[in-house]
Length: 268
Image (cartoon, rainbow, N blue to C red; front, top):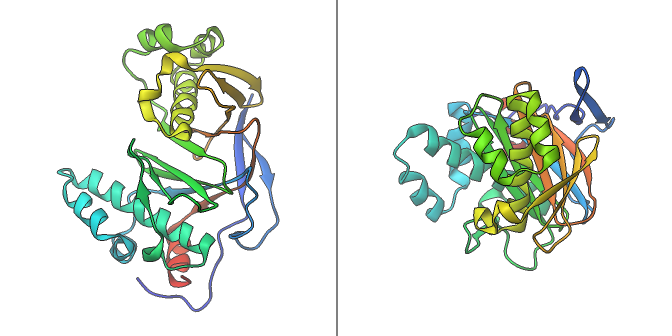
């Protein structure tokens, strides 16, 4: 990886949502650079990275991993899964390092009893990550607990059975839209349990999704206020971000390409 003298910042942020004609930008802030330190508690930044990473970038970012993360990476039998894990942890470390003003390797990541990576108690930021075929998403909040999920839109098996068991009437009605409708409900529910930090053990049976319209919904049934927003992170994908609050603001959504990652790495 090379360090560029002339730093090119990521393009102005866009948040995408569905409308009758596909996707549309909700926000297009005319800022020249990411805003790192000033996240309000109920604000969320979403970062999007295409996978797999370029080999030169991956080779540089892997040096940010802890000894335990290196050990865990070595336990993956499939190269693709190992690279996904390395990319996720390395990109999270780099992003959090910029928010906190410390090198990526010095970000003190821990793992909860349910396996969710997090910052230790007492740190203002919260984060979550998700990846699917070809895409990595990282959500960072100013303090409110956050969860994110993403899926590549594709046909899936057992959707009727899953919907009949877990989905509300409005969620089942959205399945008329095909795989995208099913996966919209799926990612919403996954982001909710990830925000709660309890994983699938929280029980999908307990969750009721109440649609607000305009790609927003509330999730009730787990004992905490939880708001969910669906969005399109890239063509052919659908994602949802949830936070344990009655409402939250997506401050920016940015896609980081190889040059952006190189620049951010060189500036830590």
